[in-house]
Amino acid sequence: MENENLKKDSINKEAKTKKSGSKKAKILTDNDIMKYEIASELGLLDKVSESGWAGLTAKEAGRIGGMLTSRKKQKKKMEEEQNKEDGSV
Image (cartoon, rainbow, N blue to C red):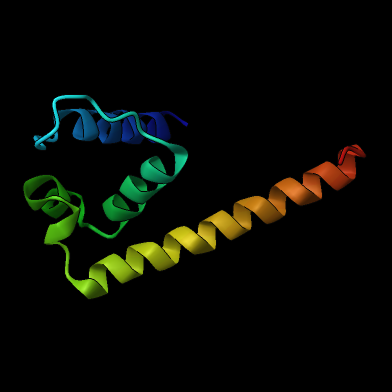
């Protein structure tokens, strides 16, 4: 749990310190956080922080997108199963 919190802190810090053309700080959505986590797991977080998401190759971006889609499906399935157990709709 502590390791997960440290990872989230570093991801949030990474997104806040990203120097983009916009002056507003971007509010991270759940998908953004998950995307940063996957990039970190694949060892691509440094590359993303240096050159942004556009600096990734098509293969790297596709791998992140595929894993993101897979995790979102798993999360949705787990939520549906939990709702069935609880009896709620």
